[in-house]
Length: 599
Image 1 (cartoon, rainbow, N blue to C red):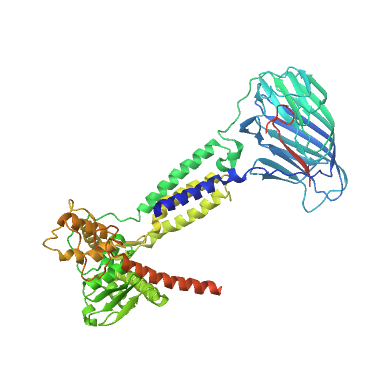
Image 2: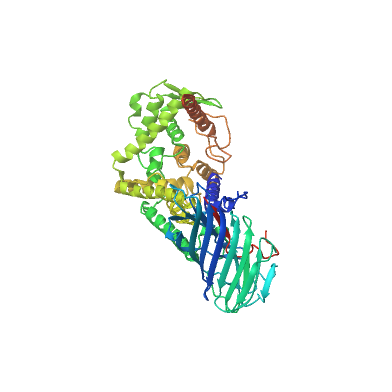
């Protein structure tokens, strides 16, 4: 359950990292202030090529008060009539008063709007008249002829319904400025069958002087209040040219980018990253030596040593297993005082500890029970918890030192590079998901794939290798674990002839997480409940550490140790904290959304 919960949290985090732009990408509704700059004349000259590319020249004459730096102009790359199409402008030049002027191209509102910020933040314009000329191009502006057919316009000339349509806001809807006069000329790739236009949103009012002559349309407007569009729909009898469209709407651009090829690349890199991570991690995994069944643990090894050489990990219940091992060896006695306290009392002279494994000696020394009558009380106090914590630490140090000193394992530091790569992949995944240096959140996926498939590089044993002698012990320990953990049909054990070995092997079963299976094996083979060890004087019934009912309960002892260590941890934490909608009419409904103003 803990593992499932962990995976669930991880999946939620990845989904949040990938999809957060969908939740935070909407453009907030706000009331824009009217701009102090008055546009006295706005001329737009649009030329639409047969391939659907628009080349535009906008000449804007503005009356500037003091304290203004320049203009800004922005374009909406989304087209409300074609949500799969992106119409990103390519700005070729910007002039002010006939001279080049500095400008920045920016993205706003989740990369929906392309902004040209014109002017210098360190200087302001001289008050008076300034003329700006903007040249830009946009691909894919011709729509199929049916687009906009059901929209109502204030003025109609000829028959606008044709093979293809140019449905465009020739004056963008969000200019914050008053515009006194508008003059627009549109040149189409073939003769225009008809045109219709409106000033304002909805049906609006009629444009001035709408005329069609061959392939050219001209129109005008006057006295436009701020944020008033001028919209044109013209029919032209040419095949609608193909244009790039995406399988997703613009809201997904920050997730998937604006290229199907880019998505394919990211998916390919994710697979490659996962494969690379897995293969790299596998270089740190030692091949199994084979585990023929063993009917006894490796000679001279205690339960923690046996489990460590088998898994390269210090067992979670290693302290409990070691104390049980000492009790089974008659070096200590265990006494249950109550549900929360157990006493460990030494019963043997120091000399009797000479042939005990170094891990057991480290635990006995830390708990100060190496001698007759020496006693340790495992209860819920900070002092007892501190000593138990030291015993666990000393046990870990001792088993690792034993493996190295006896040349059963050697360090292999080059294996640790995969851990470094794993950590780096997390950092890069975060950068990808937050789009720090990446165009879309999907770029976090290759790095998170590498992280997931190399995460086991943080397991104990990476950076270490067993020697030939270590591998031999590994084979023996693995074979003994098979005896403890597999059912009687696979590895039979003559409990009737060697009944005492059931209890002798309990510490090893606890260290290997197989106490329940070992007890079940006894019960299935003999036909009676597994006996309670004479060195474990508990009045409880049912398994705790062992995980099932029907035999001795080791949970009380483990609970006492955990409770004691928890009291110490709580005291340390306390000490530390004390210190420190769409319209049925045509106006404003075409492509070419956006606007501008001064700054």
